[in-house]
Image 1: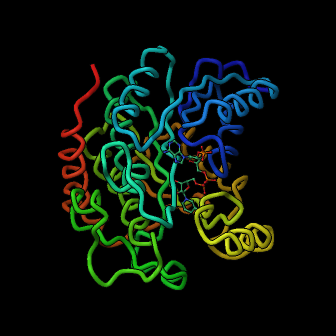
Image 2 (image 1 turned 90 degrees about the vertical axis):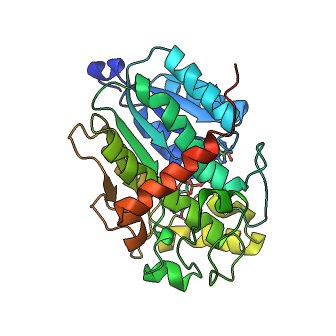
Length: 306
Ligand SMILES: NC(=O)c1ccc[n+]([C@@H]2O[C@H](COP(=O)([O-])OP(=O)(O)OC[C@H]3O[C@@H](n4cnc5c(N)ncnc54)[C@H](OP(=O)(O)O)[C@@H]3O)[C@@H](O)[C@H]2O)c1
């Protein structure tokens, strides 16, 4: 049952309809009103009903997080609700195995995993109260020196520029696996956002979480079916391996980081909730700031709907 003092708090979460986000949305129901942002109204309504059945309250906002025009409108809609927002969780993400484009003609993974969340955050920020927590779900595959990711075929972020990433172009010498360079590059955007925005807005708290390898979620849904199903079947056993987790466990860590009232900002947490190191690349302030500046230049080419 939610405690009474949580009634004055609201938590915004993107991608609450599956995997890690679904479990986190349910957990956030114990901390106040949950604003569920997703692309499918029926799925959102299902999660809302579950939260309400547990004694919580939730509001749904439909938005395709890859569509910059819709993302900005959704953020404006959320501000218009006038809720006392205590935290924003940028969780929605995809691992596309095949090339795809968003409404603006940009690479779908880069738009969904990085440009959309950045545009969403940039619209929300001016209306957020001092001390609000903004959490981005990152992925350690952005680090070319992360052994477990290299063993899985990743070669780290292959970022050249935001324009190049939006065209699906990456540094040479990347992964042999379809979608791996795009995913690692786009997820580095979550860390660039946290590190850069933490410097830009010291009155707010920006945090990143690496949720652990979660074969129990649906992130690998675009992978070859047998591989995806095998991961799902082995998920309960794999959960005990180093760096692995389950959506339920990841949700616990993320909820703790999102609701933490301390001043911690610009921090990256691992699957157990302990601070961890990002790649050398994105740990360099000049690099992270360039990643965000270039992303904003690109976003500025999309007119805001009147
Ligand atoms: N699973 C892992 O091993 C792992 C590891 C590191 C980081 N992560 C990150 O964790 C986050 C959650 O992923 P997950 O593993 O829980 O995957 P998931 O089960 O596939 O859930 C992804 C969520 O994002 C939503 N989503 C995808 N594209 C969207 C769009 N264009 N607009 C709005 N919502 C969209 C999905 O909505 P629908 O239900 O409508 O599809 C779903 O709610 C992602 O950011 C992912 O990169 C995952």
